[in-house]
Image: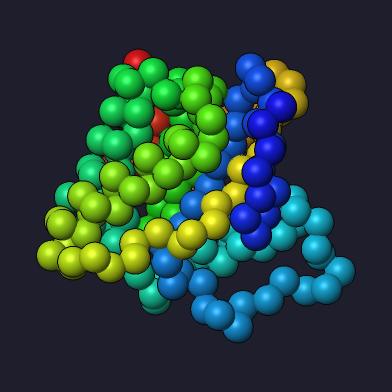
Length: 181
């Protein structure tokens, strides 16, 4: 099993799918805190994700079609390069959820996705050398087929849950509307 740590622990058991979420730099206010009684990683993730889904201020660059395309192109390219198999994805206004089967070390995959997409997105936004993504990401290894199905549904239903569309297939930046090969 591969393990590394930044602010959060990152586990990569061999042969297991991984659910990863990362967000734009500055997408949560510095003063945003999780209530003391809800410090488990699952509850903490739900609190952050709910806050990100309801964001009306802060960087919302992923809603700009040319920026969203940059991220989707990098995801598809990573699959084409056989770094991972992309099972599901969604781009929200300020964060991304993916479900992948890693074929390379997780640190290498996230560095590639975030680095290449940040360069392309900053170029599309005419920003030079600006930090695009928050440094840390959240990941969770999938333990069984039922959990895999739940996570895939969670990813593709995220725009519906956030009140952005009525049907997952109506969200243009998702594997529900643009299936992966």
